[in-house]
Amino acid sequence: MLNPNEEEVNTEEISMATILDLKPPPPFDAEGDNSSLAQRWKEWRERFNMYTVAANIKDDAQKRAMLLYVAGPSVHKIFKTLQDTGTDFKTTLEKLDEYFQPQKNVIYERYVFKQTHPTPGESVDSYITRLRTLAETCEFESAENETRDQFVMACSSHGFRTKLLRETDLTWAKLITISRAKELAEKPASNISGHNKSRNNVNRVKDEGNDEAKDKVRHAKYVPKPHKQNQCRNCGNEFK
Image 1 (cartoon, one colour):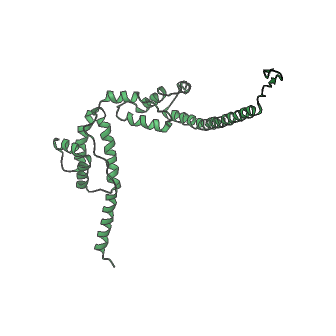
Image 2 (tube, helix red, strand yellow; image 1 turned 120 degrees about the vertical axis):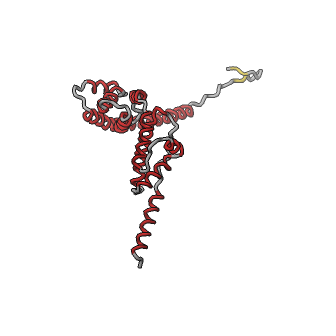
Image 3 (cartoon, rainbow, N blue to C red; image 1 turned 90 degrees about the vertical axis):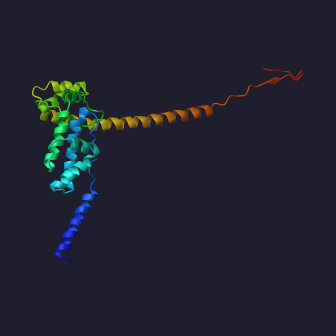
């Protein structure tokens, strides 16, 4: 029977094995496009935080070391140039935030936001998520209103956009409800249209096959009669 110390060691081994099974996020690209640096750092931070929670990394010193190691060589070089970085995880993260966040280009972020349109076949929820994510770095006074307006202006359907513009009190929640209802209503119609198109194609192939068979029968029935020739018994010449 195992003693308590042996059981504790086994538990730690299992915990360490679980941590090793998890893959941390890839190194952060600190040398990429500066205009999107702040947003990319924010997204990378979120992934790193999820990793530490999933891996059950709670020790402050271990989290700090993991942050600097996983972030990659470029971030580590930047960190060594910063002042008053401290020795704890919170201060280290704050210093990195201060370095990456001020490099955000708000004008560029808003330009990208305004140029964002739904892609062909993209769902309403997917497009909404993209707009909300982009709005986070635009520093809008009302991100919800800006996102609503962009959704309406970028609508690919002129008729549906006109319908939305006629709404006297189009709230964000109301816009989502109307758009989702339209999307659900169009799915059955799209399926029926696709089914009819497929059936018409099959019928057209059948008709073409029938016409070809009829032509073969028609040609088979027609056999040209040989031209009858008469021969003179006296001279041997042929005449009609």
